[in-house]
Length: 164
Image 1: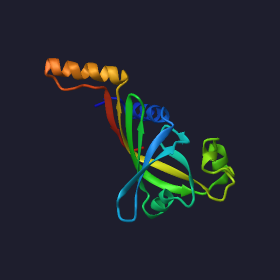
Image 2: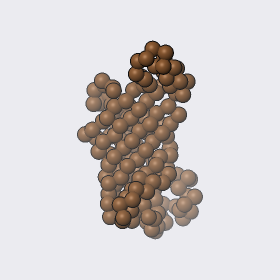
Image 3: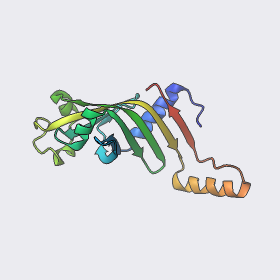
Image 4: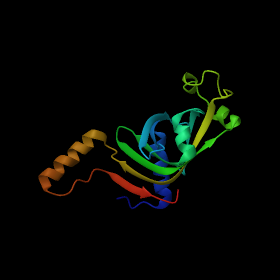
């Protein structure tokens, strides 16, 4: 567990989440089943709030309107972040234009003015991260060291961050 200050944890969380362009967004369907799908992250700030471009008529938007509690999973080659928060559907063409990318055009070829274009804003409430700066090699070394010494695995830095 990390002994960093809250501000250091927030900074590390922002750094770990902005390393990955793609994340998994999890919503709950009307029956309460969890549904995850890959999304392209548009923006992240020090509070770990996230922005996504979506289509107005998508299931994820329907799910968020009915139940705004969501999860976001972010992974890189040597870190994992799990974010829990509340999502809102935002109809803001100016913000869409600000966040627009050519990648979004694959789903919305008419651009940010497309009437089906909408934003999802996730207000992060809590997060947990696991960071292993040395990647897989460092993990294997730590696992081998644990096996040889009989001491618990110490595979990097982890913290739960609240008050986001």
